[in-house]
Each structure stands twice: as structure tokens, then as C-alpha cells.
Image 1 (cartoon, rainbow, N blue to C red):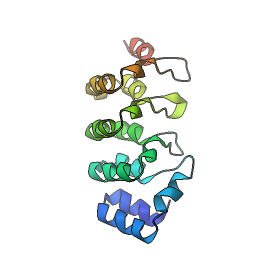
Image 2 (image 1 turned 45 degrees about the horizontal axis):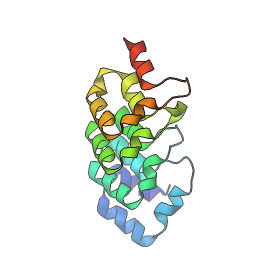
Image 3 (image 1 turned 120 degrees about the vertical axis):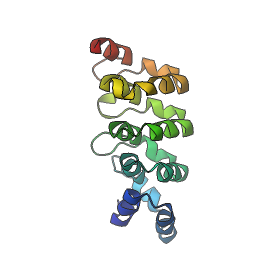
Image 4 (image 1 turned 90 degrees about the vertical axis):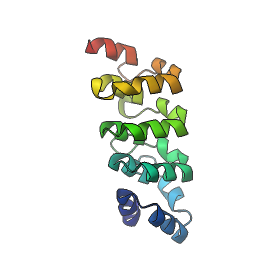
Length: 152
């Protein structure tokens, strides 16, 4: 990704984002063509720039499903960094993000269950927006319920 775009995303500057897009109308498409890439949405999710993240999703929804080179999608990064409100906002925009699998096929629900009490308030959100996410299986052939029972 372009260094300027990275700086804009780190700063959460929506105006500068649109200025970069004016300079190159295909900028987001170029980023999207790379299979595993750190997108502006990944950076915004890590830095907790909610408005910027929502703006980027409006421009390029496919970024929400992309894995970065570490195998994380933006929701995983928001969860990892404790940005619960951003997770809620992203799920409001696209409920199917609850099923997006990251490294080891871990979904956001698996991550919440695996990490324990710090994100327990999100369980209801995942189950509300996508009840079928409980059937998603990770590479260890476990569903979220299996992980939850092992934690007890």
C-alpha cells in the first residue's frame, strides 16, 4: 500500500483519504487486487478510527473480508485491540462479517469465545446478527461451543 495512504489511515483523516482517491481514482482497487494486504480498513480497525473505518467500508466493502499478511481481517484486529464499538459498527454495516475466517479459520465469534471475558458482551451481538455463526468450524475441527466448554 502507498505510504501516504498508510499515513492517512493511521491518522484517520477522511478528507485526506478522498484527496488521495482524487489523485488516483483506482487507488482502492489497486490495494484490493492484492490477496493478503494491510488495507486502510485494517489500519483504522487497529487504531480505532471508527468514522474512517466506516468511510472506507462505504468505498470498498471488500476490504472488510481481506486478510492481512498475519491472517487477520479488520474485525479480528478491532477485537484484538479492544475496539468493541468498532466491531459493533462493522457488524451493523455487514452482518456476514461474523463469518469471515482469519488465520486457522477462526471467526470473530471463535476469537471472542477463545479470549474469554474481555469481549463477552459481544456474544449477544454475534448471535443476534448471525445465529448460524455457531456452526462455523476452525481448522482444529472445533466450533465456538467446543472452545467455550474447554475454557470452563
